[in-house]
Amino acid sequence: MKNPILLILSLLALALAAVIVARSLSSKHPASKEASKQLYTCGMHPQILQDKPGDCPICGMKLQPVRKQPKEPADASPATASAPSGERKVKFYKSTMLPGEVSQTAGKDSMGMDMVPVYEDQAKDNATIAIDPVTIQTMGVRYGEVTEGPLLRSARTVGVVDFNETALTDVTTKFKGWIEKLFVDATGREVKKGEPLFETYSPDIYNSELEFASLTRSGNTALAKTTLERLSLLGVAASELEKLKKDAQPSRTITVFSPADGVVIEKTAVEGMMFEPGMNLYRLADLSIVWLKAQIYEQDMPFVRLGQETVATIASLPGQKFMGRVTYVYPTLDTKTRTAQVRMEFHNPGLLLKPGMFATVELESELDKNVTLVPESAVLRSGDKATVFLALAGGRFEPREVSLGLRDNKANYQVLQGLAPGDRVVTSAQFMFDSESQLREAIQKMIDPKASQQSFAVGEQAKMVAAAPAPTMVEAAEKTFICPMPEHGNLEYNHPGKCPVCGMTLIPGKATAAPTPLPAAPAHAPGNH
Image (cartoon, rainbow, N blue to C red):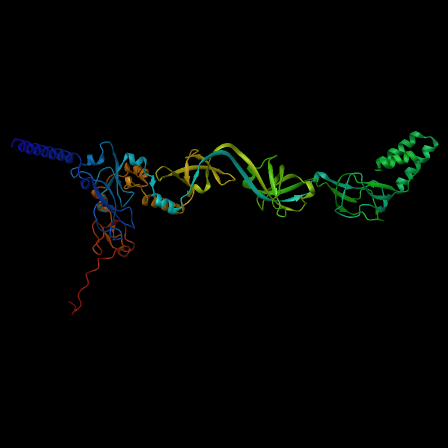
């Protein structure tokens, strides 16, 4: 009998110990239902957050449950609420309905809603967004990387191929004569230096040759030499003079040779014509090097310098690129087109570049050897501000204001301040952030669940705290209130409360029209019960 009794006593002792341990654990760790509470929000106005179900005070729609958050103890004092974990400190309180309304003490806002605390650690991370990975994939978010490299800027323009003015040659004579035989008889013909152009008869040349022959035969060497020099000064070719010295016989005609290589671009010489001294008979152009003259816009002039390399392409020669360099920047500006003329030189093997052709020219210059670059597609502009979304770990994004410099020729911007090489940035799906208001709304809709009650403008609100103390009773009495429903916007009240027509909470404001007295309740028509 003793053994069963001992066994029963042992079981009772164990059960008592288990009850004591369970009670101690329950006192240290409250139930999960007490440790958290359900929040409710409006699908149309996500800034509305309440801890109980009900209707949206703005549009009247039914509030929907959103998420769980730790519940504060029922007996928590304001000091306890300001530091729920024993370490967090309340910086100020803000209204969930009116982002610009802040206070240094806990209480209700002008619409009768409880003001929520903003902690110091929240103020440091107030702009960070968290997006679900499925949502990121649905939005088609793409990323780019902030790089470091040279800042290359290019100016693209159109130019016209022209003759090299330093390689033009005119064929003229210093004597009067008649063309008896024409060797180069067409424009566009390519000639070489020393190639015969035409034969001419000149009385002046013929008489001088007769004089030289006579003086040579008489032995008057000095006068013969003087005559020979005169013929040379008149432009008689050296080969003609050598023949005259050798044979001592005058020739009725002499041959005029080409003074340079080139292509005949102008020709006035005709067989049988008479010409006067200085008359232009041919014009030759050397096309081995051609000029290209382009118009550069005024804003691109700082990026053009002498000796700069250029690349030209011709529409009729697809796939071919011609390398050249800038040789001269003209000192004048066209006041009508606001452009300046730039001259470039190009080698022309095969004479593919023909004067008169249009060419597309790209002038590339290196403005800096090492700068920080961000893709242009990652930059969102709002007025004078430029914002970039920085991709953080865990599907988090931080909108960061950056200072930008020049744009390079690869659709990158120089970053002066705000980013560092290696940062990952969002380069697509920013269509929802195309203005400052949409940027703020998107951040509020996608706010981090752990910081659901913080505002995008916490930093600005913090600056307003010192200058915006809690409203006094006199200030509240001077305010006017209206119903948020547009249909009741002409009703004005001098005290907060509920709209007597629809029951919505009144908000501070002025009536949209002259204040209208409250409509009386409709009387029942006779016979209607």
